[in-house]
Length: 174
Image (cartoon, rainbow, N blue to C red):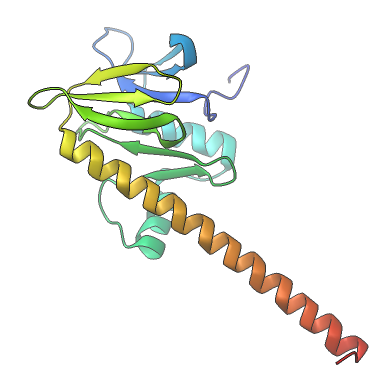
C-alpha cells in the first residue's frame, strides 16, 4: 500500500484541502506532502489499522475510560515516540485539521478565528481556527500524554515489584 509508513512522528499536521481529487494531505518537515482522497479522520483510522493494528474508535474508548475525555480528544499514536495527533478544528465531514503534538511549540492568535501554529523547527502555519480552542486542545493533548506516560511507568513498576517479590518468595530470601 505505501512504500514507507506515512503515519510516522515526522508528520507536522494533516490538513483538509480544497482540491477536486484530494480531501486532505499530510505535511512533513520542509513542506513535503502526501495527498489523500480520504477525509483526515478516515486516513488516520486506515493508517492506524495498517501500522498499529488498532482504530480511532478503540483509541477514543481508551481515552474515555482512562482520561474521561469524551469529545474531540487527542489520539495517541505511539507513547514511546510521544506521537500524538489532536484536532484543532471541528468538521462534520470528519475532515478536521490535525496537529502532531511532538512538533508544536505554541499557538498565537492572529485576529478573530485565526491562529498561528509555531513548530519547534521555527516554521509557522496560519490556520482558520479559534485560538482559545487550539490552546485548549494543546493543553488536553499534553495532559493526556503526561498521564499516559505515568500510567505506563506505574504499570511497569508494579510488574517489576511483583516479579521481584515472587522471586524472593520462591527463593526464600527474606
